[in-house]
Length: 280
Image 1 (cartoon, rainbow, N blue to C red):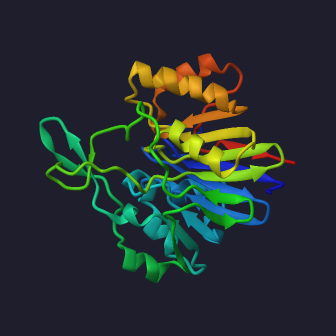
Image 2 (image 1 turned 120 degrees about the vertical axis):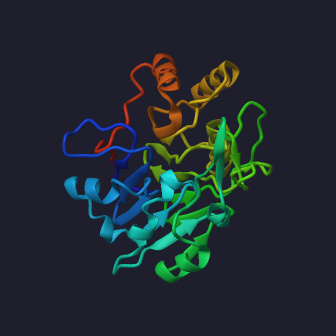
Image 3 (image 1 turned 45 degrees about the vertical axis):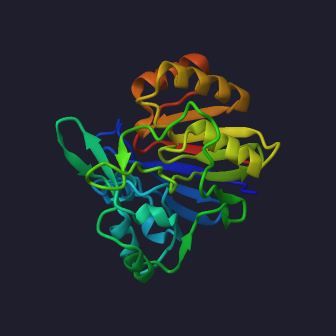
């Protein structure tokens, strides 16, 4: 169990401070007791700049965790691994597969992990942990591994494919989330929730039965959610009863507003530089 936890947003779509930079991306710095972990690396344009201005020592990361293989979460990976202190890398093997997004009246766009293949990752990282199943990164810090898709109202959130011709849909089996055990409940850090936020939380509940939900932080990919999906998501979240919800990145402005209306006083804005602390 983690006694002291601080999560700092290094990359996100929203920025409120004049010396910081925003981008379409997501990355957070996690300080959990003596452990320092980089969760996702953004699109690669702002990570180093924001870390420097926020006095976040990303060069001391002992582990880098990737939520999935899209560029807006992995663009800074090569730079983050090119350090004297070689961190461990925790990633699903499918994160390195080619990934594409279909566009109307335009060629498909490559959106996969840039500039690195599995062999390159093995050469740069101290050790690569392939997370197809739940894994304990550090005591009290867990990765979900692959998330079962149990309900019928959630999908991957967009036209994602494994080939440029867009004939092979990408099931995004590499999507995973981080679960941190604190004295007051679980703090869940999301990437994009391509598996669905409800599927993700149901999987975590099976892994940690009976544990209360302290906080939910990250992207929920509700930007394209149908009214039915949104309503069923809100109902499910009410049952999980998170005390803090921080929608970020791909959640969408409309869904974020709906979350704030349904959970008054519990929703906080995510922006570059925001820090969220959880003590014992």
